[in-house]
Image 1 (cartoon, each protein chain N blue to C red):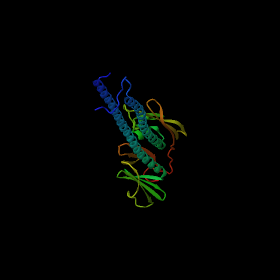
Image 2: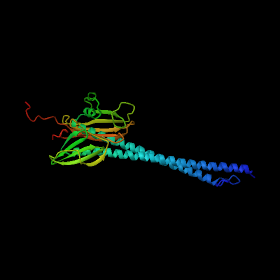
Image 3: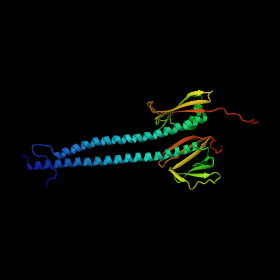
Image 4: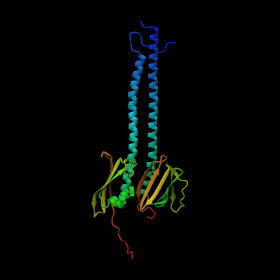
Length: 156
Length: 160
């Protein structure tokens, strides 16, 4: 027959072991949730940021290909001309805008329709090749070159 | 005060609560291993997706430049600012790139872009090019084919 002291000690050790296991379980749960949440957040952020930047570059390059002539007005302003109308794509306060103008309208980079949220939009004309570069708020950038039939100076 | 947890009974029988906790922990360990693996895989796929997007833009840009110049050395110069004289007359160029598809000659090289003229007709006015991206082990990650027709400039009027 067990002595009362031994019984009490067994009881205490058993309770402590159970509690430790339960604590370990709780800590593991917490770590797991934190890791999963961080990973999910990072994946989601990367996806959103990449999608925004790549969509902006693809949209602009496709617009250039679809236009009759393209003219780089400023580092973040691109004028795409077609018969009867022209499109101005510009960036202001971290947003890429697009605005349509009827031929012979005064071109102003205001009142356009917001398209994408990007930190920097850079458009350059390099000997007939228009380089479109988009940088997101995390500093990650995507660049694509696009050939324009008129040489990129607006003279078709 | 007695513990509310039922302790081992006489005769050395197993504590059921302890046993349950051990089983739960084991189950949790297996589940967490599976979930962590899934998250790591998702993270890697996300990074790979971004890298593929970069490769796609790089290949697209190379194809656009090549269709304008008809020369792979010039394409490499415009795209990566590599001196075209190094590749004068070459029909194949292998360019080491880093994760962001920038030209690199350091240890961070993880990709190789190959531009290869596969066909040349009409006295070199028409050229077909294959652009491929390979990893360190030579596995093809991305590949496109393009062509350029660059006719000689025709004098339409007497400049004199």
